[in-house]
Image (cartoon, rainbow, N blue to C red):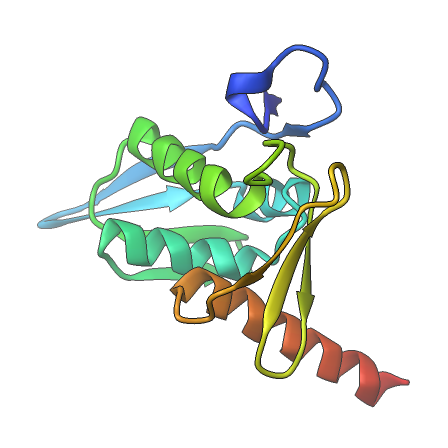
Amino acid sequence: MNTVNISNKEGYERYQMPELESRVKNLGKYNNSYIENLPRVAQALHLNYEVLVKYFGWTLNTQSKFDKKTEEVQLKGEFTNDILKETLRKFIDKYVLCPKCSLPELDFQCKKKTMRIKCRACGHSEICELTDRVYKSIHQEDVISTKDKKTKA
């Protein structure tokens, strides 16, 4: 298990996430990289794994897809575990940690056309720009899950 906020290791043992596990598979002329435990990592970050799948694809400029049978993310191309960990670290720094207190205590509050982040630790609050692809993806996933909850009720 890793601490979510690397720069703030002491005293934050409760902010843990599993180590990112990956492998590269050679397919003749082409190589694919696989992230084997992304759903568990996303669960530890309190996010939908689909947001992380999209982020890896956008950031690494490659195709990414999630195989529900094996619960693995497939990335076209060869990416080392260090590159994938660094990509995840950048995601955490920008979208999971509070910009004010650097704790992973953000709540995403989505409305029809806006989204606000609010820190449960320090109370910091700000409106997110939905022009950012990741915030837009988080907003869409939340809106979809909210609609699903309403139809089941």
